Amino acid sequence: MSPIDEIVTSPNPCLKRESAPIEHIDDTIKKTAERMLVDMYAAEGCGLAAPQIGLNLQLVVIDVDYGIGRNGIGKKNPYVLINPKLIVADGDPSPYTEGCLSWPGISAHFERPSHVIVHALNLDGELIEYEAEGNLLATCLQHEIDHLHGITIVDHLPTAERAAALQKYKIACANGARPGDVDY
Image (cartoon, rainbow, N blue to C red; front, side, top):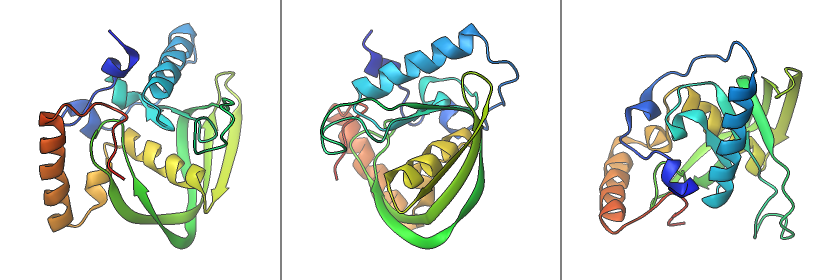
């Protein structure tokens, strides 16, 4: 099985459930984070939440610096966030077109707050604060934390746009869309 095949896609029920906090950071959690990074990079994503690999745990991996079109040099700069909490979400609404590894073949255009502050534990159990404003990291933090609460990109769309996105997703899947395929 390739790493991309480990990513679950809609309508997998894990994508709609609330995720449980992680009580102990042990080798299993560390190996899960490593696996998630492998899956994310294989699908050329910039973030992945544990529900997207079928685990309802509050675990997120992010790397908005890696890959062509980001910093252009291919340097990995991953973040692992355990039990992330969105502390601040404010600032002017920032429009963004988002794809999602669990919704291959489609994208969704909507606005999110432009400024966020997130608190999370790292793999050493240290509390880290992440702050981002007006960039991909701000959007990615919100997107991945949404996954931990059973919210996906189509849930942000008005009813008519959601129906159109669902129809487009159905067609994309029928045509073989896989995680990482996006229609920007």
